[in-house]
Length: 73
Image (cartoon, rainbow, N blue to C red):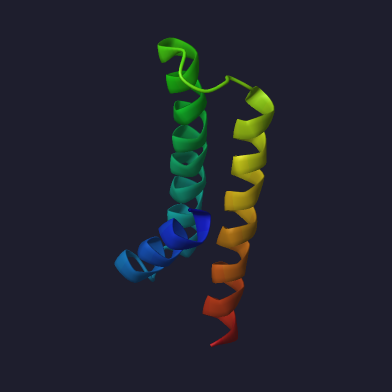
C-alpha cells in the first residue's frame, strides 16, 4: 500500500516529494487504522491495534523503497 501510494504521489507531485511523502504516510495510517476500526464497529474480524501499527510500518518501508528508487534514477 505504501509503495503504491508513494509512487502515485511521486507521479502527481514530483517537485514536492517531502510534502507528498508526509501526506502519503498520513493516508496510509488512516487506511490502516480505518480497517481496524471497521472490524471493531461491525464485529467482523478482530480488532488489534498491533495490526494497524504493523501495517503502518510496512507502508513506511514501501514508501522508503520508492523514495530510494526516485533518488537512484
